[in-house]
Image (tube, rainbow, N blue to C red; front, side):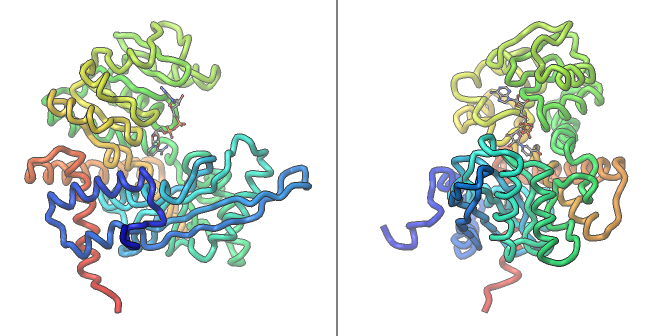
Length: 423
Ligand code: NAD
């Protein structure tokens, strides 16, 4: 194998991201030079650092990563994850996908991703804080409001972002809120960030319903997952006049063909920790949930839930992918053949990064918008992105997933070509 092919970030996930990019570049007849360039992240940083456990007698060495895929159009943007299997190949793949996602909705960012290989559930909060502060110190020369802006991801939260912001600010000598997004509101975090992804998904329901000639009012909606994405998708669906007939989470699912009272269900989940047992609804298993009669299915939990074995039982006309990668390639083909209209994850769940972009803009200006302004701008950006992806899909006679990638890749390629090669 030639040296150039032995990529440091090689992994099954990275190879998959490149294969997807290659497939779409082929269809686009992409400039070969740019194509080769975009396959590799521009910067990939691996750090190791010491971490002292609470008992103070043990010091472990941890691995941390930050990958910046593309620095062409502005700072890079992407989450920081803490998990015991985080590796360079995974974050490099996710950084590439973030580049396309930002470009699809027209944000002035390249993609990034990072993380620490550690199981956060095995750490005390004090230990998570020490890991966060030392990791931030190790990558400090590579992040910043004009360089690279981390956000929460798997195993990290608003508090972790607050510690990152504090560590960065201590080194700078003044408060720098714009260095991270997804912060607590006290530090300049945006209102409506938690709801953003779910609301963004539903912003695409009216134009997508239009494509399948279906009214939104009284449309039956099934939502898998009732976390940050699923809960607010269900709330937004019921606010739009849809009938949310079933919802599930790890505790199981609940179903009522007349529609569930979503606000009451949310309060139930806050009190009981899960949807199971919600009064006035029948219990339904997660695998039956996907096959329930409905017009709209919103997978908003985990990846790979719609696969070759269950795709044939899906009755929805429209799938809005709230989760990342909920549909396998095999299922994607089957559903397309069956005439199901799929709004792909890379477009459907881009509301989260869009409101993160708003947070960054507000922090830089020290001027904060109202919730109504944020929601209105989010809807406008999502609806425009949908229209643009739909046009690409019609012009090129390709599905929405391919069209979304074509749009993202085209925007990035255009920027690369006009900047030229330095020196
Ligand atoms: P979360 O942890 O807040 O919620 C996940 C929900 O899914 C919970 O209700 C959980 O009980 C449920 N769940 C987990 N496993 C399940 C299973 N096997 N069957 C049914 N339900 C199950 O996570 P989230 O932030 O809502 O993210 C959900 C998905 O959306 C993930 O794929 C994530 O990568 C993606 N996503 C999230 C955001 C965001 O802003 N939060 C943005 C883009 C994409």
